[in-house]
Length: 430
Image (cartoon, rainbow, N blue to C red; front, side, top):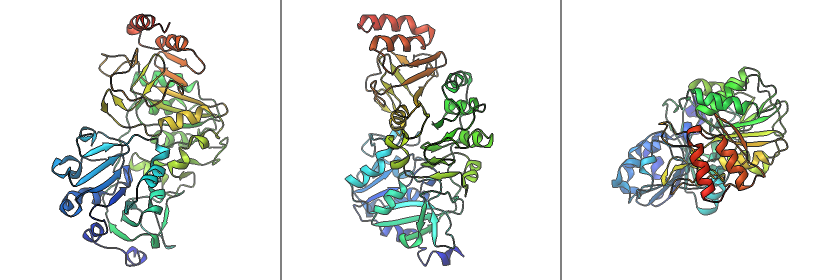
């Protein structure tokens, strides 16, 4: 039946690649909406697409087009957020990270580039003549509307999600069928340190707050610790398992939200199959572009907006690195700065940076005298708000360098506090 609804636009993979100019520019959808057919077969078209530029984010696999250096002269990949699948390929004349805030991904792409093809994933069509982009509206709707050609992989496993995800069939040039299971993101189980951090954070989240959480052990632990709160709302870039759990516990109802009251709004969903089932045709969930959701000028309009992000390390003056270990790029800034700065401008809001006091191997302090050489500053010390470790809370807004150094040293691991104090005195900070 869907073949009839697609108005004769269902075609072959070769026809899809034929729509791409030889030295064209393709923007591909990301995460659970990643177009598998495009990435799985791109390397087979290396000779016919020399000089092809591709923008993407959050690659779920190390596809051949990423890992085979023989294609370095054919394909030029710009990745807006790195994952473990492609991290080691970054900077080797094949794949390059683009530093920019999540709220600017689509506007910057549109401003700097002509987009020949948007290649994404969608749901089965409905009888009204629409498909849904499903679990992703991060940059996809904005880019799709500006692309010269649109190719969508129709996946029966892609849920229909409300918000700015619907695309008229007439706006799509070519459809492909792809029934692969959606990529999933395993939920990281919190450890004891994460739970200690989460307890501190939960005391900073009053009833009626609107929250933004990331992904990982600490955010998941925060979700566990908020089950005693009331009337919370969700305004976040990534909709996660912990938010689903809070909603199912009756903690999240959005009754006090300033923007999109009683709606949980996000830019994309990435998690388990049960999470995808939860958001499917759920009127409580809406997805909108990051150019809207992550806009700090909109975030701050939520009263009691609490943003919780993690970090790799922070120096004792308040510089936050969340995207690299020294020169080695790990991920990207994503929406960390967007949400952190937006939240602290909110009436009753707060931007929280949460991190364990020590690295997983216990060999280095994450609160340090100075960032590692080459470390990328994701949130400047001028914008830092509240920092939390398992040893407590440091509220840094309005503090002098001396005061914030003392505050951060007080929540560092006890084994490094004396050395941090010595280094701070030697530098004249205190």
